[in-house]
Amino acid sequence: MTQPESTQFAAEQIRNAIIAGHFKPGDRLVEQQLTDMLNVSRHPVREALRLLAREGFVEIQRNKGASVSAVDPHSVIDVYNIRMALGRIALDHLLSEPGRVSPSVLKQLEKLAQNSAKYAGLEDQSHTLMNDFEFQQAIIDATGLQRTMRYFSELTGDVRRFNNLLSVVYTDRKGDSEKYVVKLYEAIRDGDREEAQRIWQAKFHKAVERYLSLIKDMESDGARRPRQAARGKS
Image 1 (cartoon, rainbow, N blue to C red):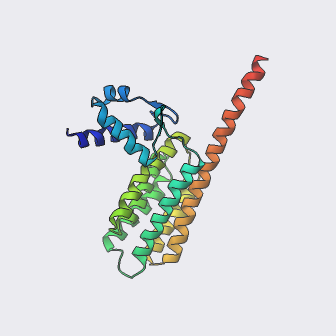
Image 2: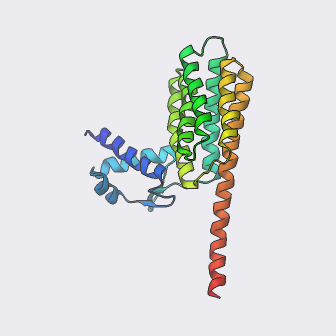
Image 3: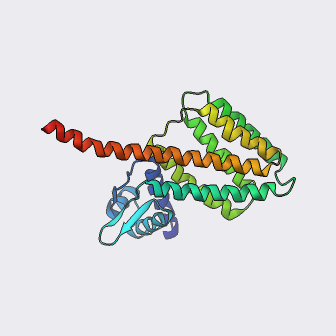
């Protein structure tokens, strides 16, 4: 591989490991260990870490090196505000003039909406998650706006990381499917821009509330454990 290809390869492998939770928040990312693991030279690894720092997956501190970034309320709000804004741009573009949403796109969105309702009844929620990512991206991709498409797609990795790290369990998938997927498809089909924007915003606000509640619970659990241990010792 060329050096740029090695950098992209290293970045992809490290990014995927962070998203999957193999590298946890706060874990140090030691260059020599990564070069041995990925079988690439040190320079591409260093450049990969800088790239991942720009993406928000890695934090680089002077004299301390690189570590995996924390998942905190600020990062969740930042990611979702951007994704929400990109969605508003997409819906405005698609629904500002009749006929911009092609029949093939509507057919794709209809199928994904039907899948959403079907997967909501399965015990395994992974199908629901993947279908929802595909549904959102299909709306964005329908615009043909290259930057909007790219930025939205890149931030999906952050959302997958939030889900994996916080062990999100979706308890009302049938209700969510109806309110946020089927109804959104119907609003797009009917050309109702105002309703589509309302549903999109409500969908993302609910996601933020869910994540922030889980982060608060994790912080509370972490605060309680030392006190419980201390009482046990006494």
